[in-house]
Image 1 (tube, rainbow, N blue to C red):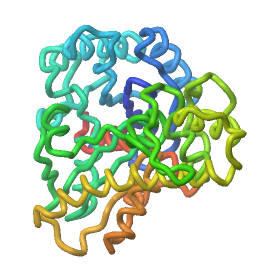
Image 2: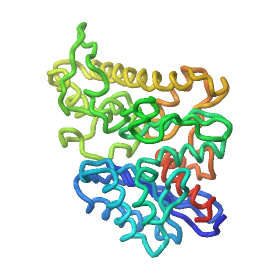
Image 3: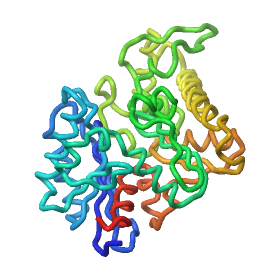
Image 4: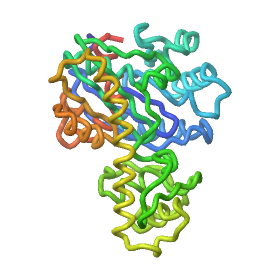
Length: 347
């Protein structure tokens, strides 16, 4: 086990997350920054600069990623190579290693040569840490865009799928999040004014609007512009949600838009529950196995646990975390996890 401080990086397509651990593994600070990578690598370089300004540099840097999937890159291998080169350029000098699952932490050349091990492996980093801290659990990470579900049994990750394609089929990757998901992906139709109304297939509103109206959107979770570039207030969210059913916000009282948002939140919850129930129905987890929740949408994971009669364990409670950082640690689980795993491996 190494004695140096470590920064863990989770390079996503929409956000850059980073966490600094001290030599004993205690979390010192965590940061999440908007990073619209699909618009160009300059956004990643800007975000890296902000991370170093906030966290400082470290002699050990551990990286996991999902950003290779954005349409800036013509293929996932080219995306991995581009992100590795960017990290080497900004935090190189032999201090950076890339999480490759069972292959461990790889140097830059090895990571570029094995993109399938490095690509979209952040869920595995988090799952591996959960497996080291608890014998059995269902790890559910509901982020801004996606939901990852990772069964842990016997102190090991028990996932069926290995990559995004397999995990989509297995239901361990659900493309629903609590912030950036377009409302048109949350349901096909909604009950409103005594009728079932189809939702417009337009990017008029997002999940952030839904959970802002229900009062469940975590503070600072919505870091990208709203669908219309407008304000992030309940009134503006109601206006955007009204457009989804071809109306203006003044067509109904605010209470009606809040009720519609609550219904949409429950519709999304049911889809998350369905994915959880399939995994639980495999019978490989004991009845008392908790649900470990992470991500800005972990409030949904807590609801699943309550409705299934299982304990809910916030991810941050598994580690040495100051109370004031607990929410950010749970929201940035892969960045914290990859730092912790790198420290344990001594790399």
